[in-house]
Image (cartoon, rainbow, N blue to C red; front, top):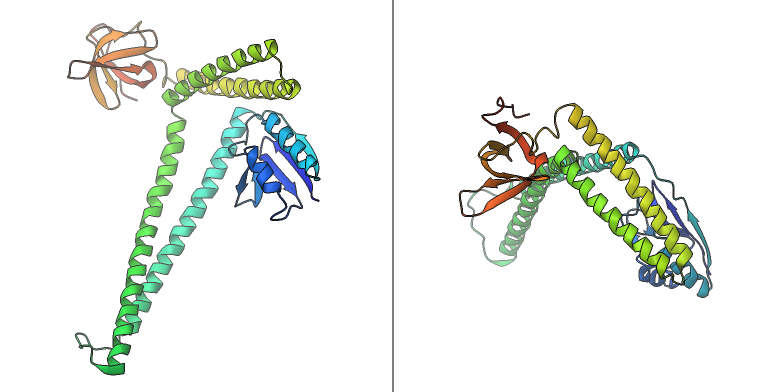
Amino acid sequence: MATITISHTPAKGTLVDGDTEKGDGTGDILKRHAFRWFRSLRQYGHPNSRDRAPRIVAMEAAAEELRAAGHTVTVKVDDEVRPNDVVRADKHERLEDRRDALTAKGEKLARQADSLYRASNAMVEHIPLGQPVGPGARGRAHRNLLDRSINTAIRSALTAEEARRVPALVEGSRRAEAYGERPDVTARRVERLEAERRSLVRRMESFNRYPSARSADLHRQYEGQLKVLDERIAGDRAVLDAAAEAGRFGRYSKNNVHRDDLVKIRGQWRTVVRANGKSVSVTTGYSWTDRYGWEEVRALRCQHVEDTPDN
């Protein structure tokens, strides 16, 4: 029987350590409780559990089933919440490591493509250009050599094409990270997290009225989720406050935008139909209007105020 440790830390998430063996049944038990095999780590763990509240109910349920199967199991939980800036810096470092690995892979693929191309040419360089394939064994050898050269050239082209896609993937990763740091995206994330927090509070109130067999585990799990949400909301709000002080967020609202004004949204100037508390409705050129959050307004043309630059 195996000795297993199910642990959770903010930096590493929920992972399973132990002297398990293939076919001993531990994998099937862990999978029933939402654990997945991480090939890069060669460990079981909960997906997307880093810097999130531990799923204590699933961890304890898996531990109980493993103990019933005869294994020795220890559950360790570190439910500390790391500051938002630490989480963002750690995520950026991981993304940079992945980009570096992807860049190195692209360079390796480019070298392989060049090597395959030279190998393909070397196979047939001694054969005069346009020489027909003759009959008999010599002709078959000639044909086989041509086929090998063509297949190698095809492999070279496919490998080169894969290498050419790598820079776009790296750039796409950087653009996606920068998009997530934009003030308007951060504002929408805050709204989503606040809605998630309200939903969690309602679940906690319902849980207090109707306790279950795992009341203690559920209470601890919900409290951990609440702490994580509070830290993430506070961190993102600090980012928005800094953006507002720098003039990159919160400049426009129904207080300074009026009907028939022009606002620049997603690179286009649109006419305002209605200014609302959290959003602005603009014309589309058709019979309907589009609605956008104020965080997406980049510039304003209004007869009541001076034109504002598009930053």
